[in-house]
Length: 132
Image (tube, rainbow, N blue to C red):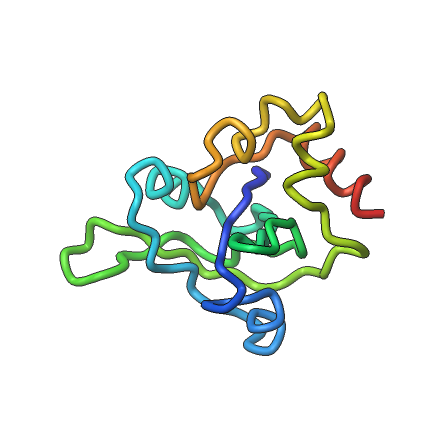
């Protein structure tokens, strides 16, 4: 199983929206590096749901429920189906992540503009610990 971090502006699509909908296709990503990550996702992988914009925090955990599918008319972009697993006990802010030396190599810190990025197992465990 692999771990990921997926960003969304809460006023566009929030954690509460995903919980309400019970599943969605993570679509609309238009960045080449993020597209490669979406293509690499497999059913059963897990991802952090990250509210970008003003909030800037990991707020929940999702599960990838299927293979990537074409997103858009030309078929070159990818979307993946996801479902909520659980909200974090307390959000883990970007500020808290940046303040933790063990997370200095996390893609969220190193490539902050990337909307979909991998998360290493030790990073995943530490963010969950920080969430309570």
